[in-house]
Image 1 (tube, rainbow, N blue to C red):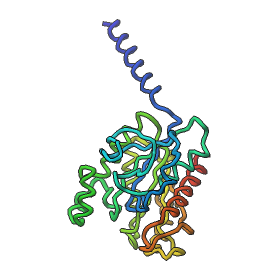
Image 2 (image 1 turned 90 degrees about the horizontal axis):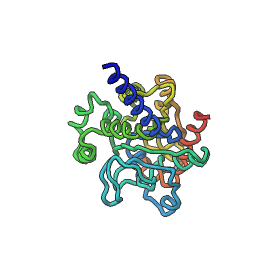
Image 3 (image 1 turned 45 degrees about the horizontal axis):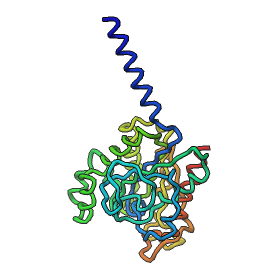
Image 4 (image 1 turned 180 degrees about the vertical axis):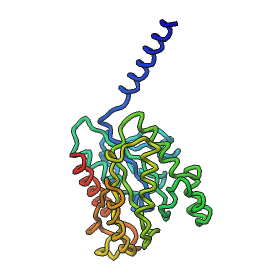
Length: 277
């Protein structure tokens, strides 16, 4: 009986050892969520698909036959990085700019679950069904892509990613649909706290980076929301606001241009790099 117990302990230790070696501590994973600007609204251009470093990865969150990708697998992060037919996002140039400043052994992984036009309430895991029930049909159809639960899909994919690397941060770009909502910071905190619990993460080690909306210098239709976004660090100590001033917007005054996304992505990277250092 004692021999069997010892053999069991040895077997367990070997399993734990194999699992620990399979996790690459230099593989930095970043969760991305929000609405259309994180989803990717700008048309992908030739420069965005050329020479993508194979150390920059995306974990596909859907089956995308048009891209030759299947859900739950890693691929070189050639855009789109959200759903199968979305556009350029800040995550694209966040990953590229960050990787360029990290050691050669580093890798970056992106997981992006974003829904254009959604309120932050969509990511409230306990109340999202109430929100979706009253949402327009076009939003419901996008939510269906994630089996009706975008937050659940984000957590599902994050758990897969944790078998390969380490979650180092969360990128958020959302707020247009919550413009003027002074409770927005607390609603974001609820989502953040749930992610920390569901993924067993330490909030002191996993920062939240929130990007400003199209700025007033670009005649942003929701620029007033930036004042509320600025208060986020008051409720989430390990959170940072990424400025959007000077990031080019487009004619609808809601979205960034491709050039705007590239610049904003680089600013996310600069913020994250300062935290990592």
